[in-house]
Amino acid sequence: MQFSTMSSLSPVQAPEHILQLLSKLHRVSLEQEVAIADKGKVFSSEVLDDLENIHGIEGSRNAFDQLMLDKFIALDADKCQFVYQLINAMGATNVVEAGTSFGVSTIYLALAVAQTKAATGKPGIVIATEKEREKAEAARKYWAHCGDIVEQQIDLREGDLLETLKAGLPRVDLLLLDIWSSLALPTLKVVQPYLRHGAVVLADNTISSAKGYADLLSYLQNPKNGFRNMTLPFTNGLEMSVYLPGSQ
Ligand SMILES: C[S@@+](CC[C@H](N)C(=O)[O-])C[C@H]1O[C@@H](n2cnc3c(N)ncnc32)[C@H](O)[C@@H]1O
Image (cartoon, rainbow, N blue to C red; front, side):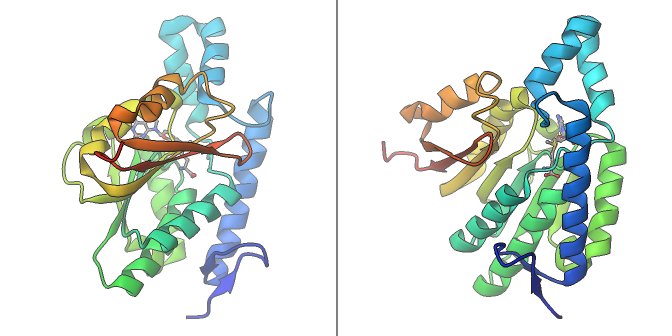
């Protein structure tokens, strides 16, 4: 199979049709966010606050879900490339993605896991999660367009991830939290028992959404929970924590 790189600055190696799809999907995602968010980027806690002013606490959650139903809210391309690099650097083969949407970041995770599996000979899987049936269906179509190299690496669990991640997880090398901020800590607590020593946990937008992530950040920063934590200076922040229980 012929592999190309996204651009001279991207580390991602994949067949040309996948790189073209990724560029297109990132573009659509950014256009959607500019159209609905004042800051040109969707931060779930801020959008929810705005909707609460219109619909009240009760109605805002439903209005938020409706608004997000056709939105990608994809992880930024540079962050996706970083996760791809990290998976290859760690030799990570078991990855959990909390929040899959239309499956853009998942494609990077799958491409990287295909490579680490080939390099290490270990088994592995990308466990993806999405509660909206329509989004899951669309994600599967994009992955099918990518082909076996992507499709075969993914176990998509449809439904509420606080339920779907409760059982059947392997020893997890990397957890990507790309989910509404209020769900990040509950998700981490579900996955934490499966994290291997040295596992990496990433969470998106932790600078811009520091308020929404207050509980997650204080949990990660409390040494008794086993994490060593830092904020990477990507746009809006990307939290990187390494799970090293017993070493504090
Ligand atoms: C920020 S988007 C994920 C974007 C994706 N990682 C990407 O880069 O393309 C978050 C997604 O999480 C989904 N989600 C929200 N709550 C969920 C839950 N309880 N269980 C599973 N998925 C959920 C939303 O429907 C939304 O599609």
